[in-house]
Length: 314
Ligand code: NCD
Image (cartoon, rainbow, N blue to C red; front, side, top):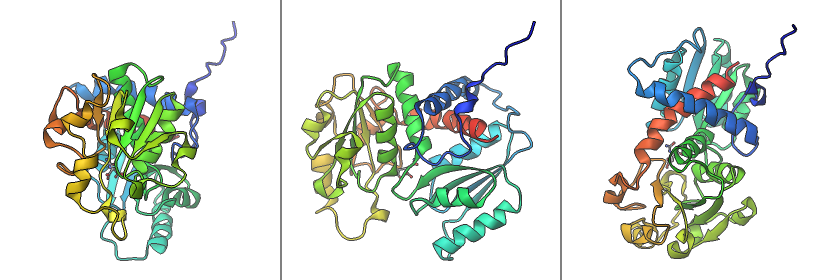
């Protein structure tokens, strides 16, 4: 009897992961499903697989990173890839030239995957046109941070069962945040209602066109929310003054136990890190294991990055 060729879901995965904006629901769900299978492995005592054995993964970080860089590093190693992490933060060369020159140099070494973080929006897209291998965006300027949104989605699903029908608030420096943009696209795509909350100066013009409701008042914006995502003030992307003072910012937009009460009773708190305690978040709240998912986000980040490396690297 002729065996029917098994149609694997992998067909939904293109060559590169550059952002959530152009991702299909199938692609997002495939990454999330694959990631779930790695959670248990990562909690076990033997974490090594040989899925990417023989593959070379280069992590190219032009901006500082703790979580994302170590997460991609571990993810590649746990899948058996040869991983090389290059810290480009101190490079004195001009950005455009550096990127293309570096791309050509690295391409000559036949990597299979390049993971890139860059201060310029669009840098991973440019890189993907210059090299032969898979490119994964680990955060570009203020544009996108797709694996952060995917790990946030997995963390929510892990706790709440699913994302559809939830009300999610994203609060803080929306203007400069790639995490905000990727999460707006992904949470909307997966059926959540998204509120964004920021002072007027940190709210992008036309944000409502992305299918969110915008608020400048925490009380109104948090009303009825299941998830509260806090963001760091991206001072390194600010030119000039956007806020009167950090103290005032904390008073109006810092998440405190009192302000969290505006959200649903069982609301959970998230933060991509690094946190600025006492600026966007109360320090005790950040560590409160009954409400804070911060550690879980870091944990599941490795699983999501393993899924991305496995699925995108052909
Ligand atoms: C975020 C980033 O780099 O965009 N951090 C991260 O990847 N965990 C958020 C931030 O830097 O504030």
